[in-house]
Length: 111
Image (cartoon, rainbow, N blue to C red; front, side, top):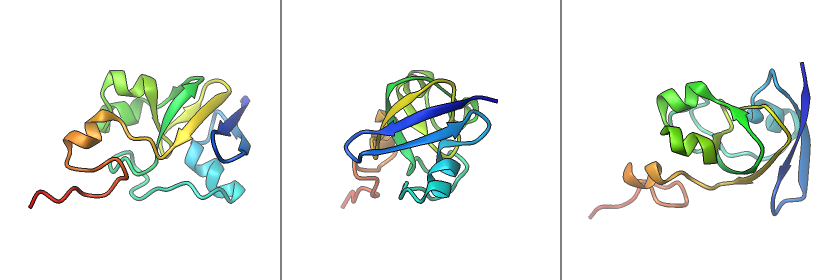
């Protein structure tokens, strides 16, 4: 079991995360206000852009992210660190826009 440092840009928040726990689990344990909803990799509410580092999130890739998106974005409810990370929370992959959701994560109004 390894522990990695996860830094969230723009917030000054840094936490230690085991490679056996998800990023969301660690955030909740540390009292960090990470947005989430479904906790199973489907809603994309917990998305973060990966600026540095690598995660393991094969379940997220199978459910909600394309292979290319999984290289650039982490679904924190599914992602487990594989290295130290720098993340930009609240950044959504391009596929979310194609699903009728705006950049803020709200359902787009088509009327």
